Length: 386
Image (cartoon, rainbow, N blue to C red):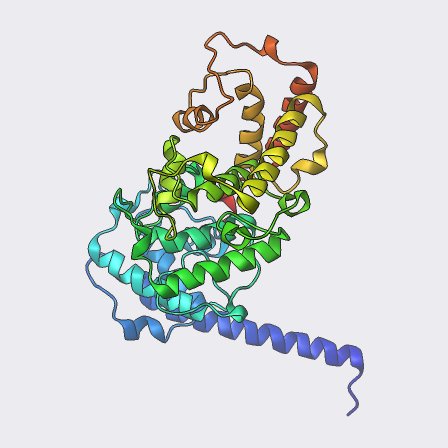
């Protein structure tokens, strides 16, 4: 019997739906076995998780956390948990609620998930501690995800990220994270350092920027241009500029800068280094970056900001740019980290008597433009869960 194209398409669609239903039903049957499993008392064995498909592993992870009421951003986990009669959302969930047995099970689940991911994801770096990331595994990520992936390698060893509060907050929400005041970048393995290079290179290519903090070693005998600095944030520009000095061992007065460079594997402090010793391409590169920074700083107070300049910035970046306009007039900030950040600039002079009347009309308009953008900007934290 002849079957027309329309009937054939309909038949194929029905078969596809039946197949999808069968797969979903099978997955549901698999998860039914774990819904009532007491993860608090019974630890998992590697063989129990290694044979499970990725979708089941993700939901299993959701169950472990869900027993304590964690609310997930991931819609699939959230919908699954909300369908469970025992699930009680708890906005005050904390990782401290997890006991050692649950944490060991989560370790097994997360490693199994990482091994099955088509491309690397935030939360996978413990699996890659002794494996070199291949080009096929890189995938495409948001700016925040690239930053997290690179930072996660060091966070595993306890590094703190006090210069970027959102990043520190992100890792503090990870059950495995244990910050250490004694973190030493030299504790990174050869493989981990190689992976940082691979991730940073991929991040640079996807962002379409010529260089990022950590790259100045490549420019010890080469000059950088204004064009190569396009696309970098003020924070990144400052790190680049100071990196030139740090590679000569400079000791920094700003606590957050000293902490940042002390955590770099290549940094060797030299109390005898003097800034005037900088010469050649190093000196020229610093001058180029400073001139580029000064132009941006000046434009914040003298030139109306085009909305296009803000596109792509995270809420945290835009907010810091807006606060800098106030900082240029000496505003004293309530947020400790923000006050420390601006106090580390030579140009910052605290003025307890500051008021908005000190702002020019251009500055007020720029503040309004940035504030309007902030209302629709996404936070770096909202783009990832890990």
